[in-house]
Image: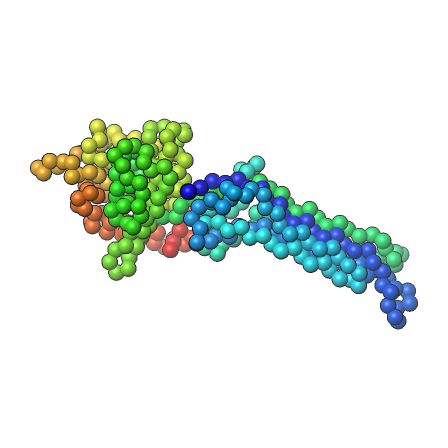
Length: 341
């Protein structure tokens, strides 16, 4: 099951309290304060794990609590700090404070981690309160409370190429034809209910990742249909492929509608480099050319048939070249949303 959103409650560990103790040692006739400090409470961290692909684990459990720090003890012994709690998430996860909508961080590369809740500090023992006029203080501090926060997790898939099109445009058929992915393919709309990823393997060990999202319909950016839920999965892609079947009622109108939905959803998506894939060319009579399309902003227009395996080689070579050029010189920057393998 593909789960790309989750809300969890995290409670960092409370710090241990300081100790009130007095020394009773041979050779120290007047003794003195000897209360140790409390240990720090454990933090709660998110860490990207390449073995994970969804946020499914967080649908079974909602509350996560880190270990508290131990109390200080006599002989100036500091309490043990609580262990940090590390929650594994798939690369591409963005964390927000669910109440304030503050962005806490983004995990792009495997092994990258962020702290979402800080553990409480340990309280000071009475040794810290000794003064010239107060030689035997009875004062000590309780441990600080750990941060409590409701965290919203959102997954954005990491891919080089994003497929965008209306329902039944041939996106899943294309993905199945050029990768080892096996998305659901049928002759009715909305067969794709969740995003799919596939890896295209070319010669010379060249590869790139393609993301297929559910079909986009008019008004998707306002919440209509299914595609709006998954448009964020193509925000990191280096190039987009707008998929339009040649048997569409009006290819030009459909192209402009897709461009309008992308622009309405995100200004960044509207300027992402894109090409146009005119699919299902096997439906055209042998002597009929491709429908006319005015797409001056596109870096290419390709006619393909995934079923007949026509036009795929040229398209894949261009997609690889464009995705590499778009990412040339880029380094992983969570704030910018780019990813470089």
